[in-house]
Length: 113
Image 1 (cartoon, helix red, strand yellow):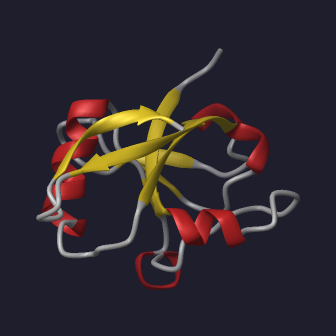
Image 2 (cartoon, rainbow, N blue to C red):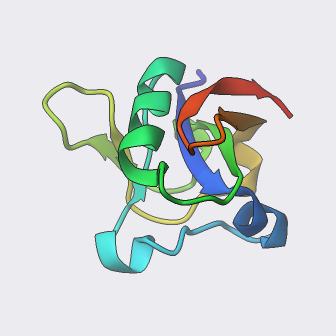
């Protein structure tokens, strides 16, 4: 069974990543897990909260949590922010979409890549 969730990544980081290797975001070294979010609307909110001032283009990866190759769990009481405790197997990436932004940096939505 597929268990989709979303992960935000700067486009240049994702494009530089070797697709044959497991993926770990730079923040993994500090946080000890990969941040994910359930739901497009919630992801737009998260992007604005944490990345509005980062001018880089961002991509949104839809991941199948059951195929990441690493353990995962919800650490938040709302149950919409799964954390993956290890690397992400590239085979679990179901879709890559582009985050839409205004000129002031505000994220407004998501579109197919």
